[in-house]
Length: 498
Figure: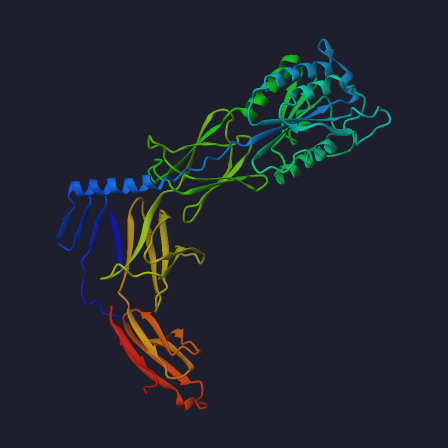
């Protein structure tokens, strides 16, 4: 169903009612006045097949977005306290054994690179060395054996510079256009060098260097101290340590799918074909752009999205829709609903549907901000609601309280403009005015250049040009010319007849 709003300026009398022109896409019908023209089914199918053939002949190949490489940096505590007893072994040896088993399970994992940074393993304590950290195994493929051998040959001996180690970890992630950077910190103690691991972690996340870290606390619950650093897992015993590692690896590597339902006014996911931008809520960086689509079953398409990030989502409708602090459950199919009901707005000149290149300014009702500049020959979608419209013809036409409703097309009609051809035999200074009962309303300044002719599209009405030659040095040489513009007609004006 279409809504039409016909506009007649208050300075022009309405002469007649034009016939409505109705176009029905689904039924392949055209209505012109009282006449209905119906395309035959065969003609319609022939056109459809012809169009399909053209599309297929073009052979357009869709670009497949490659899966990102997951880079996991293990930051392993090798401080002196890791020599302490835990279960039936030392903390360090038992942690290395369980950690090595997890590493073996990752050997066949694709799109995965691992690295190992350690701290407290180079300098004996005492004395305290708060810079005792080093990247022992850089990122690379098939380096699991090297990581395991490095751990087996390491002897815990030093202090615990967690904040400094995390800050140095930023250098371990070399630039990469399609990587997700994950840090897993394994420790049995707290910061011992006066640093602030929470501040360092937050800063690295804001810069987009790494995702929110995972922390496994060995032997004692450090949740209160580490929750500000990242996602904390308590490992008071061997079983909890093994489970924590498995959960972290699962959350990091298992695919997570997301379905975004763009809801209409009835709460149904019928809206589509609009871009959605997913921002990292912490860093503000753009992580994804997806133009929403339906799959072959008519349902919103499924997206692969990193579940370790909290997102702010912007749906680029007009005006845009925002949904902040969106979180997804790793390894599962997530559904998120966003209200985005829309309808259409179009413009038409009465008696002529080919008017182009006429800007129309769209604003929310009662607001000054411009949300879109729509060309006259376009049909555009807007969120359901009330709008104010300004058609930038001459004179301008302002339409208040334009209502956009779900799946409906609201049409704004204006009178068909005429053309004024202004011929100047000399350069000069002048302006165009609309005549009204209240006096002259300025519309346009004539160009002071070598151009001897100007062509203006004007709404039907009465106008006046006031002009003085550039070479006249007296105001009394000012010329005035009044003229009338009729719909679809051309009027020629000579300011200085030869």
